[in-house]
Image (cartoon, rainbow, N blue to C red; front, side, top):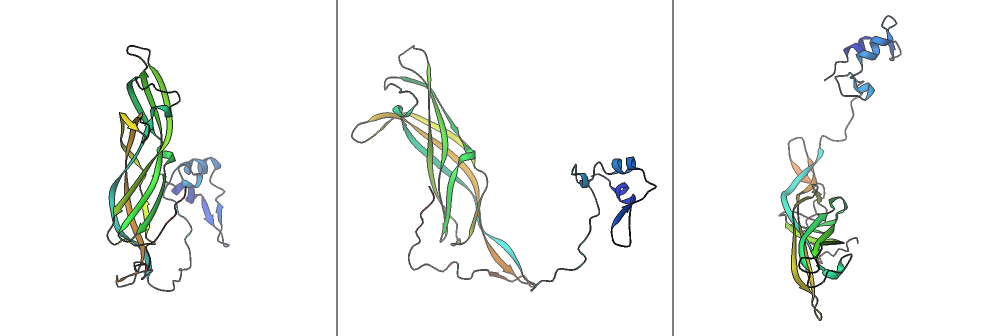
Length: 240
């Protein structure tokens, strides 16, 4: 913590309420005394800032705070099968796959969150790049091919007491693991060899709602009808 006492000792307050520099203090002394002061945006220190003279008048002695309805760690599973023909160059059905590398793009995750009674619904996808190293023939020269796609995921998290209009906050997603399963077959009429790609994601989900707190500590919901059951089940059309 820097000490800015030298900065304020070099200034006097005039009769108009403005600060003026003492002439008997040198400019060099002023500059050195405030090198570590927040006034120069270098670091924070214990400076004296002007306070608000008038007390803010409130209309009531109640305040609004966020009440936590539920908070838990949740996992989301994103997966998608890749046909061998989906890569930048075809992988022969008889090829030997040496390795599969899955690279998720956390910065480009897209997810939509909705709250229904006692449940949080989350639907989205994570972009991935899949690299496959293979040999077309036994003992042949290894080749590398890549493919990109959006792996969809969906998660329904039980949250007792949650209601529409509640707010959902999720911490940044963390990849817990990536999985690749070669040797699967895709299609209905014509079977095509492929690779199943799976990514396990983790996040902390917290549901909150605003409540009013009175001076005695009593609580009441800002919207006392938020949890009323709707006449018809809610429907949602999520963004693409």
